[in-house]
Amino acid sequence: MVNRKAFPGVRSIVRNGLFLTGANWAEAVLRAIYVLVIARTLGPDEYGVWSYVLAAYMVAVMATALGMEIILTGRLGRDRENATPLLETSLALRLSLLVVACAVLAVLAVSQDEQGQVAMGMALSLLAVIGRGIVMWARPVFIGLERAGIALRTTLACRLAEVALGLLVLFLTRDILVLIALHSVSWLVEGALAFLRARKVVRFSRPRFHPGEARAIIRQGLPIGIAMLGVAALNAAPVLLADRQGAALAEVGQLGIVMQFASLAVLAMQGFLGAAPPVLSRAIMRKDTRVPHYGVFVAIASIGSFGSLALLALGFGDIVIVGLLGPLYRTAADLLPWAFVIGGLSLLPTGFWQEQALRRRVRPGVLASIAGVVVTLVMVSPLYAARGLEGVLLATAAGWALRAAVLVVAVVQKPT
Image: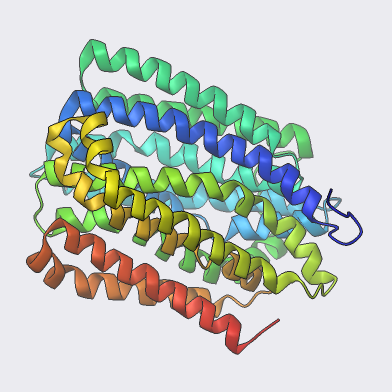
């Protein structure tokens, strides 16, 4: 049994983490079933459209984050009584940025002259940008209030509805654009529900700007937001960069499916990681000497779990991928180990980054993300020319590895 006096925050992390892990696992299992059926039914070309659209709109959503996940969970973990100005202002900022992101994405959609399905899919995804952006604002609110069960129930209901309706639509129409439209509507509905639940729990009035609070959020959040935008760019890099290198949509679909497998594994760990900031924030205020152990634990867990998955994929990837998706996805089986390596590298420095961000030491995170993106962009063309799709994953892995190294070195050089 955990000693509450010796480990005063562990119980909260476990409780909140179990709720969030439940939400993540529920979403992961439902998404896995849905994605596998879409990929097998429609084939790599159509799945390439799906992968490209989702990758592009997620970068747009993350461009609006402004570090609010860390700011909201940290502030609410320390002071829940005076949360109203923070919540009203953060939501007003998020909605304003979402409008800008939608405008940029719409322009990019219009520029897709040669890929009509991709252009239409990006246009349909504008609703998902709004909905998912609001959900990504609301979840940190529930986490900060240690009411993560609300996120579990809302997510489960919306994903169940999307999967059930999506499977019906898939077999009736076999139209990827209809599925993208349904996906967007489901996130818009979840965003509306999340907003209403947050408003009921905290009892704030409406989104509005409090000038002092807005300045504080922008001052603290802008560097974090840049760092997180770099993370989003690295997440989307395999799919978006393969397309820029001239890969066919069917090849983009091969990359999309292996990165989907990796992202599902990442989701399985993110519940506990997402639950930690409120407790970590209080531990930092108490100057708890065990805080640095958190980053080390996350790094070791990431290496162990994703290293094991990569080895399993190396031995059994062909059996699993071809067995689940059919022979058209044989190329994906060869790429799967690298996808799990990327997943592990993306999670490895998360504990160190959370601690640094809560201490408002965000410069290493910004530098790490920028360096990772630059290295990926520099390396992708020569590696794609030499190794094809595997080269895109190698370039992305190099970017993630550099990001992790910069963050770990920053903690070692400036310890707690």
